[in-house]
Image (cartoon, rainbow, N blue to C red; front, top):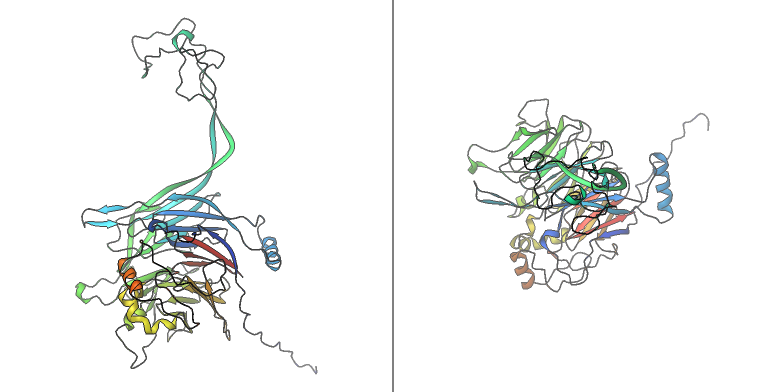
Length: 515
């Protein structure tokens, strides 16, 4: 080639993924009414992707465990690639569940505190035990879930060859409180609360031959035990909307409407207020904090979003109280585009860092935006989630749907993003340069159907305002000619950290898909 350097042609954008149904947990039967307490309110994969946690409005946390892989490391990943080529898919099974939060009442403020789980975050696994944080509106709890060997009593303090005082034969399976009777050299039956120091009792001659210490042995059976290790309470005046672990493995943040607090996992009675946007006069309040997250690798950096559509990057090394931000990300408003709904739909409901920490994904009511933390002039990409709803903003405002908080997620390789919409739909967009991937999927066993039947009648668990509007007006039609339903919404979803696998919540059902 005359010494000329051969330059490989640039690879094109990734091919759009072909999504398939994998599993469903808690699927509703036709016509079944969903109880409010069973509706899923949080989903989170752990860092390995081998465990998945969901929280619901009833304050329960349910854990699922992956079952289709047993090896670890590179060999496991190679086998997974082969499995996908053969049409197999990741499989999870129910592991355990526990009651994380209970309903409470704040007597000082005459305020009822719901048990609903707002967020779940996994912590580092240690000694085979799982650790996670869960929070409701006011209280964060640190849980340890561990397998413990079941201990059984193999030998009792009763000689089974001798009969009891009542004529029945004592067996080794009797409870530990069974006592030998007096005629067999035991204790008097009438003395239920026997006291060793009692003055009116004397040991019979020769002692008590049938009295032995019970022998406790560990069986091969194990049971999962969830223990609350710490409770982080009384630090927030407003509802907690976010918790996020730090990469140092020692600290985490919790955020409410006006403040962000920094905690040490080991210390539950003290936190440090690192962000405070509360004005001296509450009438001057113009924006609130909506979401906050630590950088995945830099333990000194975190980002938080606001109801005005801006994202602030702060550096904990600058000062103890981070009132000033290191960077501000916001999109400039196009002149003449302002309307009554502009500020409402600009509010960011969720932000997520990419795996390498270079990009931040944000979700507002109408769009997904991808931001480069090295470029604060505007988002590098904007994805329209349900643009066909723009003419319906007035109806969405009337039934409060415009205030729904949709979550977003990124794939582990950073090539795709996903978020939810109405009619139990969710959308996957390619964010690699040149990609035009925009797939609409439905949370059902046929994800590519993209057709939602018109609901006959909303369930009682939904708010009265929503019910009123739906009865007054038929569901609308989206850009594809499919009906959409404001009462079924896919708010919560999570992407597997290393594979193209998505878990999403539709009411009380957990659907899983792979590509």
